[in-house]
Length: 369
Image (cartoon, rainbow, N blue to C red; front, side):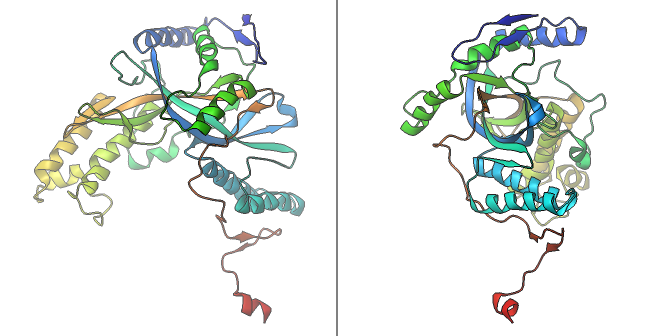
């Protein structure tokens, strides 16, 4: 194991050459991908929440997945986390009061960091990016990306799939493979540039290089991207933990969602009505058009494909990568120029310190009476 030097306050990078066969294959796969997809495109920030207890050292644990589009969505996730802990897991009234006090703050304030029951919670900010080849095409899943032995396409399978960032520990001292280390070092200088970004965004990005000079690479996630003709790729789904989860989402979109969006199946049709069932019955005037969607879904399932085309729109399963900027005090939080789509609000019924949920509060005049 070797250790690369650090400067400007970055963490040292510990490099460990993979020797176990599977890990070595993953590294070799990553080297090939770095050659074929050497460019990067940055989509923008994502937000979640990480926690740190006294015995965690420099490590932080992700408790709200870093997939939210704005800081307030991450705060809302933390609000719900505390509320359900108070409702279901609190071991005493004192513990429940502490959790409910945090809920009360999150219902009224833009809180980016707070300490509850000796644990620090911080809204964290990550950059989402993807690798592209010389033609601007986004990287698809690699041969060594995890896949289920028997793909499950059933509608309820998603509930059993792992969540993005489930159980993830962010450890700046963890050893990296040579390619991971090279990527981490090369991305330390990543910053926004160009006239399309407002001045405050550029200023915050430049400032982050000083306040959080290091980066932490997060596990790969997967999503659907779409393109029609020569237009740029656009996201067609949220992040998924595995490529198969993204494929299953695409299969649902082809057979169920897109036909409804296009008016080929009524929105108020029974839930089990989809392109395949309508084509099988062959009683709808739209059966011929729906057959195109049903055939695309069948090809996706049968070949475990990462790309299909329907009516001139190409849908692809793409690899999404994320990085957190990191400083002496841990991961970066929201920047002043980051935008919230909504404000703090109450998300759940009132819960008292005894654990009783009050679904209906009396009107003010009835309470007074």
